[in-house]
Image: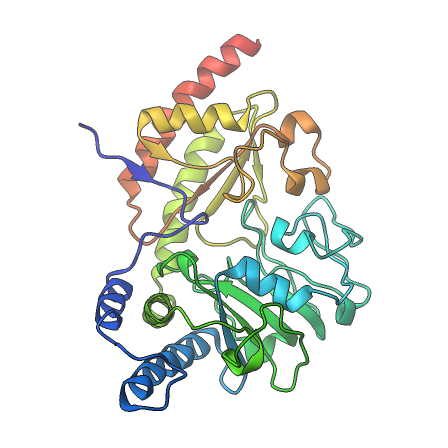
Length: 348
């Protein structure tokens, strides 16, 4: 049987060995991090070790890191009641709190007239296009850039940012809000005084331990140039598809993008159809953000960039990871181009 190839890292990355080891070890830690006895102190030490690991990987030394159930909760914690403006290219977890008032051009560049009342992602999950964050920005979705792009929260000039563990090979169901010290936010989950009073509830210590280990490993990968190699493989795939698919638009080609992301839009060829065809061929890809897939709608991201509905509905995302090999993408190119030629023949 042909080996399946996973090309959906922007949806979730495979669990890292480092995270798995840390989580298994955390399972033997009995105490509650809020307890003052020896067992509780041991749990607290593990929690704070993970907090330090995440802060160091994010370049947020001296900032506050608040653990949450994921980036969606962290976004709500940062944005609730702030009345921020955002662009239609943002993840739905951000658009739920914003007003879509920020303008987007055909290259996905966003105009932010009042940064202190706005939120802007560092990179888009569907297109991979990287944004230039303005100084004084209130909030940024750092989820897709964390671990893939060389940046530090401390020099971004952002008041708050949020991230998710499973995008960097940590476990699902844990994320973090990072903010400058002294930033005022209102707790959305209330009860005990956990997470410095910002997020009540006993911390998910096992997942948090895995998050910390994954963050440390992801930072090492970035420093070691792992994502430069991923970018080279992505470019090989891009060139192969560009040469064989004249009806397809390579969204973001030539712009600053995540090193692993390729967005293809073929007018008239439904993205969902392509995902199913590639799944049957042994490849896991997506038709956009994993949180909005399956809703059978045109990409709001491409729509905001000015693409028509037929093109936006024909978009797919291929996202690579450190485990992706050149042979994997060449096999994918062969399979996708075979289906593309069938589509083009029917459309002729």
